[in-house]
Length: 146
Image (cartoon, rainbow, N blue to C red):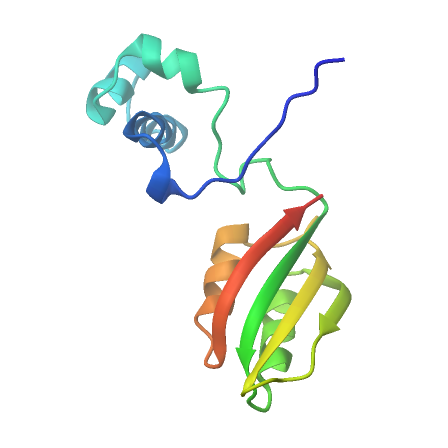
């Protein structure tokens, strides 16, 4: 059986054509255009390019989410940082499944959080942005989605 593989790739390294296809899809989904022709014209791509890729590229939150996610964090060893992260996940209707934390070394701790995202109330990207903005969070890395 030929199984498709899926990758999570940062927009920073995507070829421009994929970004333009997503722009066209956004225009269509937000009803900002009357037709696909108008959307692709505004995005600066051809209709054939749009149709070639439109069913193969999605934002992470557009149905590509699974039921759970694992993120790895590098946190400064400051009181309350992990608690604030857990609060954000809970406020967004995420449910913590497991937490693995190494003892702090040289003022930093490595933390892995596996949590249920099937009921989150915001986009996954917005959730990560909220976590990254917290004081004491040095790095957030998406490890997996299942």
